[in-house]
Amino acid sequence: MLITILATIVVLGVLILVHELGHYWAAKAVDIEVSRFSIGFGPKLIGFRRGETEYVISALPLGGYVKMEGMADEEAYAALEGGASEGPRRQPSPRDFDAKPLWARTIVILAGVTMNIIFAFVAFTAIARTQGVALAQISEVVPDTPAEAAGLLPGDEIIGVAGDSVRDRGEVVVAIRGSAERPLDIIVLRDERILDLVVTPALIREYDDIAKDSIEIGRIGVAFATTGSNRPMALLPAISEGAYRTWFWATSIGDFLRQLFTGEVPPGDLGGPIMIGQLSGEFARSGFWPLLNFMAILSVNLAVLNLLPIPVLDGGHLMFLGMEAVRGKAMSLQGRLRLTQLGFLIVLGLMVWAFSADIVRLFKA
Image 1 (spheres, one colour):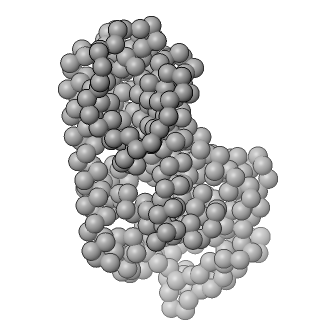
Image 2 (cartoon, one colour; image 1 turned 90 degrees about the vertical axis):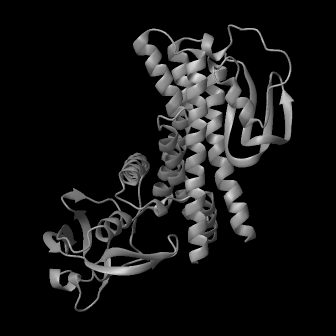
Image 3 (cartoon, one colour; image 1 turned 180 degrees about the vertical axis):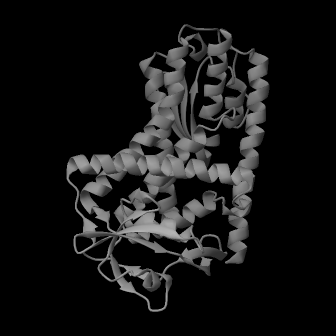
C-alpha cells in the first residue's frame, strides 16, 4: 500500500508539475504577471512567496494551475483556490494576460500540453535507447489453436499486422486482442524470408484486473519470447521510436475518447484517480523503466484531455482565442465567465463519472 501511495504521488506530482511549468515559463517569457503557481486545487496546505508569485501545494492533488493576472476567468481561479479573492480589485496592467497579443496568449495556453508531449517523447526515447524494442518473436505455438492452423512456428517474428508494419510486441498483442473472430493478415519473418499469413483469433472471455470483470478478447495461441528478444537501438532510431510512440498513444487516446462518447465502449472502461493509483503501484513494483513508460503514456493522456474544447481546460481557452481571431474581438467578459462556470460543471461531472467507474471496479474486486 505504501508503494502505491508513494508511486501515485510521484506520478501525478511530476506530470502536473511538468504541465504547469509549461504555462509558467511561457507566461514569464511574454511578461505576464503570475500571482500563483499551484500543485493541486482548493485551500493551500503549504507554500512560499518569491517575488510576485506564490508557490503552493493545495489540498486536492487532482491537477494544478498557474494564476495569471488579467485573465477573464479570475472568478474561476477564486473557486480553485477554495474561496473568493481577497483585497481590492486590482487595476488593469500591461502585464495582464488579456492585454497581451493573441499570439502570445496562444503560446502560453499551448505550453502546458506541449510540455507533456515533450516529457512523453523524451521518456519514450530514453526507454527505446536503453531498453530496446521488444520484438514479437514467437517462442511457442499451442497445438490446435488459430496460430497452428495459420502455419505459425516457434522462431517466427511478426513484423506486420493488417497491412501495417509493427514496431514492437505490444502493437501485435493489441491488434490480436481487438480482432476476435475476424481474419487478420500478418507478415512473418522466418529464416530471413518474409511470409504472408492469415490468422483468425479465437474469441475468449478473460478476467481483467483493471476492469474487475470478464472481457471479450481475441487470442491466437502463441507465447512471445520475453528474454533475448529486445532489439537495441542507436540514438537516432531511438528518437524516431520516441516520436512514433508519442504519436501512437496520442491517436489511440483520441480514438478511445471518440468511442467513449459515441457509446462504442462502455462508460465503465473509463479510469479515474483510483485506477491511476493502482497502476502506478503495479508499475513501480515492476521497476523504474515500466513506471517511466506508464508516466509517458499518462502524460500524453493528460495532453489530449486538456485539449478538449471545454472551458477551464486548455482546449476551452484555445476555443475562446480562436473565436477572438475569427471575430476580431474577444467574447464579452460575462459570456466567458458563464461558459467557464459551465466548464467547471462539465469537468466536475467527468470527475464524478471517473470516480464512479473506479469505485464500481473496487466493489467488483
